[in-house]
Length: 149
Image 1 (cartoon, rainbow, N blue to C red):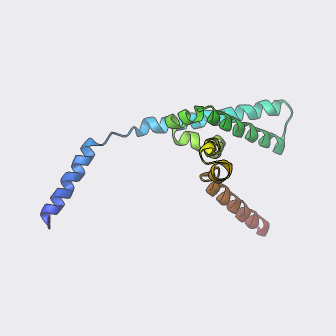
Image 2: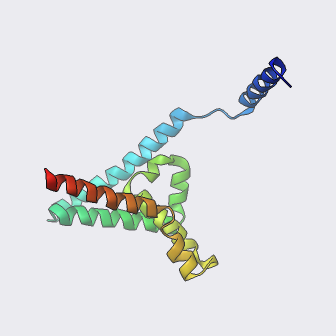
Image 3: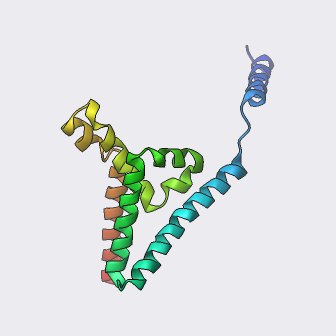
């Protein structure tokens, strides 16, 4: 296979692969991600309004809403519901704070196969560890820039 024969072979193979691959449903996937992500954010906003009506303000309000959403994300992960939501919504379920809770809770639930230390403690932050590290680093960097300004 040299020269033109090899190029024809590669072109024919790529055409064959393209004809047999499943069609992507990009519009449906984007709509599902937008809808579910928006619904999660709407629930968070509803909680914010209800807690504000109950008398919470400022940092107490923001912290309480975050804790409730993290709790709901962990609870739904434990019940197996969040995985089904994730299969349907894709990135729409990963982006909000509940997705972070899911990424920490999922490995922690499966610790039984490897024990407490190597299972739960080590695997709990496998996915979320990078998010925590870069979140702390970005927060420190923004704080330094804010201090210098």
